[in-house]
Image (cartoon, rainbow, N blue to C red; front, side, top):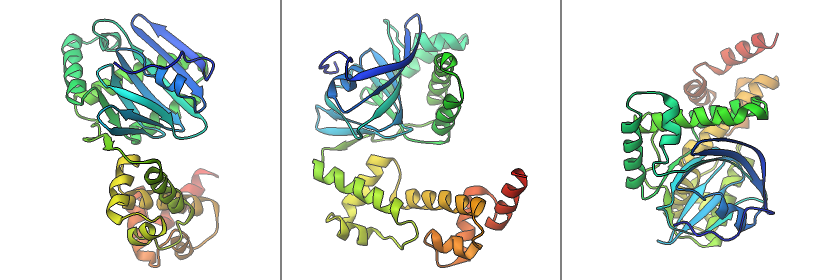
Length: 301
């Protein structure tokens, strides 16, 4: 069973809620108090959608499970959690709590398919195989979920979350969406965790600079191997993929909103070669930089 400390109030607040038989959905917002964070896991099965901040679940086996913004965590009472901590001063979650002897049935019954009972059985098996939790790191599906949620009035968000919860479970059992193979990392102390966070923030603040694992490891007094392993575990992707994606995000913004040449944009995001930058940009946006700029300009006319 998950260890519970105190009731959610007064450290956490509910912005909106929605309920169906065996199903409770709400948006939780709070500070760094452990009480409401532990309470957020209450229930036979919970789906947690992290909107802001982040959580660290310290497991009894000595592992730490990181939940970052736009991550989704499916967790059951099988998971033995020693304590829960927030990573930021403010944490915001969408929680779908499933109750009853067959918790998944509360969602799968909404699908209306004849094989919903079989689907429930498959989901139970997947969650048990994951040791009581499955972590789905930030992806296009996750991003679309949060973007659409923000556009809806609060009165419609609960029903939207219920239907998207069904969709997520269906995609999970069909393997269209796959959880991390090893969602829990081994125990690291606070200084080690902070070093990885500092490296993450440093990368974001220095996208125009040449960045290497070796140089960042020296700067933050950790080994290159630890930095690569720790970054992947905490943020769900390699430093190379993370850095490349953030650079392309910035490049797209510069192409849309400035008059910088392609060469200048390339330099602004850390590329000395305009041709190399153009190749990588095209892989991300399926258009060369100049054509992307023209297309964006036409859409804004």
